Amino acid sequence: MKYADYNLFGLEDEFNGYRLRLGSYTGTAGDAMTSNNPTTVHDNMKFSTKDRDQDTSSGNCASSHGGGWWYSACYSTQLNVKGSITWGSFCSGNCRASAILIKPASYC
Image (cartoon, rainbow, N blue to C red; front, side, top):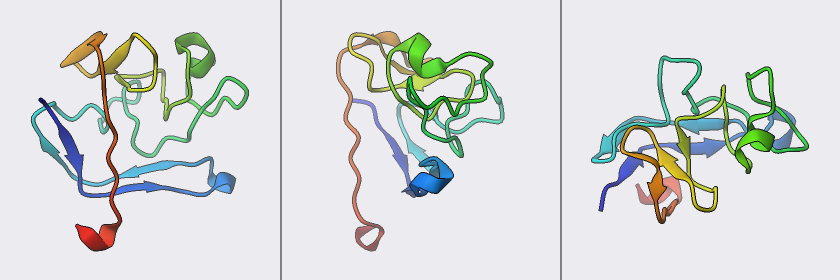
């Protein structure tokens, strides 16, 4: 099993669009969430849905790709789309399952 571990996973409040904040990466799956490429970055992006488009694309990524996510324009990672899980170059729509595990910072 491959994994990606970020030493920080934070979300801002509703007023700030539930912006995603990630820390440093370690793991075996490759870092598919942080990037210097504005078309594939997810860190520091607001959460977009079909009815609340907050991505940087001229279109609506959530509507086009079938689910809410921290899109830029549009994604290199998408873990919540039925039948099309993507994690960078490691898994291009052919992964069958994913899990997001979060623990309070006081336990890290």
